[in-house]
Length: 310
Image (cartoon, rainbow, N blue to C red):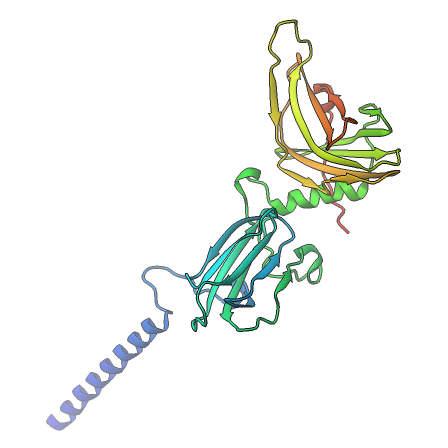
């Protein structure tokens, strides 16, 4: 009996040791967390793109919209926006022949998140890379995992993707719901085709028609609220409103051609004694155009309740 008790105690001790080993193995595997935790599964993972960089060559990556954020995984990489381009970043190795794989991430202003795993190569296979828009990348049902709903400060609680889809829908439908607002001179016609609203934003659909043989180069376009009547010797009070986004922003209208643009602005209204003036300025020219929008036009903005995206 004594021998049996000794054996039982030995078996219990062995069981406790094995149990402790299992617990330690579980902790080392990363599956054990303090408190309530749900294990991340692979369907939650954002698959990164593989990228090669070199010390002697620069890799350029072109994104479908402006880059808002870049984070590098280590000091082995250097990256930055290309001069004069908001949607192009350049990446290269900061040191020669780094051995450890690193990574970097990019967020663009249409709400897309991109992740890259990076390794060193003397001769990178791809030097110039174009990242397609998620809308045209992949099937309709299975969009790629980089298409995340990232919200940016300037759009508040609105998804950048939704804003993009609304602008695209307005542009593709190409309806003219407003027929009394516009200007025309010197063979240039600047029209307001429609005003739309959704949640906290207004969408202005504009068109520039060039009936002359001379191309029209756009210098800038301004939206400003001004007083209707300005007395003599009275300072003009102006409030500039900056568009948040623009779809198909036209910079040149060739002779006998036309271009359309959809602007997104934060929702606003106009006091009775003021008006919204939209000005179009020609670069190195004098064929400037402008039209006026009253508050009664603004409050009749068409509510967007259906998207038709092709």
